[in-house]
Image 1 (cartoon, protein in one colour):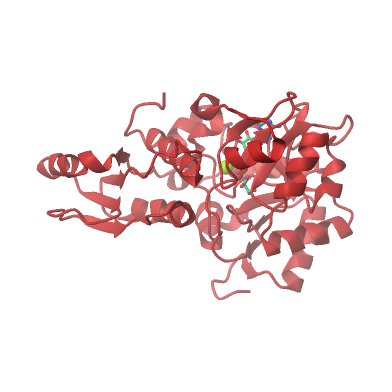
Image 2 (cartoon, rainbow, N blue to C red; image 1 turned 30 degrees about the vertical axis):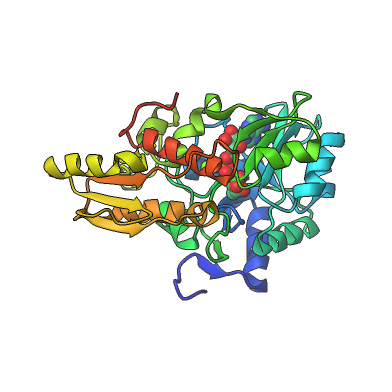
Amino acid sequence: MSAVGGPIRDADEASLRDAVALLRAGGVVAFPTETVYGLGADAASESGVARIYRIKGRPVGHPLIVHVDGLESARWWAEFDADATCLARRFWPGPLTLILRRRPGVPAWACGHEPTIGLRCPSHPVATRLLAAFRRAGGHGIAAPSANRFGRISPTRALHVLEDLGAEAPLILDGGDAEVGVESTIVDLSRGRGVLLRPGAITAAEIADALGAPIEDRGEASMAPEAFEVADGRRAEPDAPPRTSGSMAAHYAPVRPLELVSPGELADRLAVLRDQGVRVVLWSRRRPAGHVGEWERAPGNARDYARVLYDALRRFDRLDVERIVLEAPPDGADGSLWAAVNDRLKRAAFGSGAASPPG
Ligand code: TXA
Ligand code: MG
């Protein structure tokens, strides 16, 4: 056991063996990926996948991503045409999920019986070792959504998983802080052309460049029910099945209202909030003159910002403040990683109830 104790364990050989045994028996294991931590179950196990939905409180039928240890394993689940093969060869292992047409007859629990399936080969060394060990034990893939309760912020540390899932995750493999910090880029190739469903660290421009063709960006129009998972349980809750957990209220403790304010409007907005007596925590690149409340320096580059974003939001949510104010970072219109950051920030702000719906 690692120093933290409980279900969090160092990812040594013994822990990996236990993890594989748990998965093979239809249990769940939380594990690190380079994007966020996942809550995994054997994708071919009906009861294992059902357990994920129950623990997460996720609406049944909302499809999960199946994680594999490489292209060969992925081919068991789906046909890879030239485009899919090209993207897998170029970006796997890494933060890219491909939506492809599922092979008829393969288990469909994880993809909610959709004719398509989401496949991803993560690059985190612990995920790589776990997936390889699972395959050697006869497994075909590990279904894993982010290891947070539905409606909460994705976990980027083992401790975040413990905070969200408690004893319901019997084993949490510790792989340190997730390096990317935001969920994988999702590209749908099931319709004969590339469609970006979720921006991530692998950018639309990189995908288009690899395919030699532009890809359609569904952008904010693609806000699926899960759209509001990032920050808030209340909006997600109406879709969720009845929960059995007695600790639901605590786990769905509302994330504090979050506001995104452009740098030019920041000083005025802070003055208004101060006059109203609203206690704020501010995340900005510089501390504005005259700001008296809580303040933390926000990273100025997208990689660092994405990496620390979810941990920062979790931390701010625990402060004795009434409002989280974020200085809006660059909008990502250039298609850089800022696009993924903005996508998550807008969802978080909307989910928190402090802003109007994303257009
Ligand atoms: O980085 C990630 O992708 C993380 C780590 C753990 O791998 N996983 C993750 O999973 O973010 P989750 O379940 O929180 O998000 C999966 C997203 C959902 O928005 C879901 O709708 C979409 O993938 N998805 C999965 N299968 C799909 C399918 N067949 N068609 C369309 N969307 C799909
Ligand atoms: Mg998620």
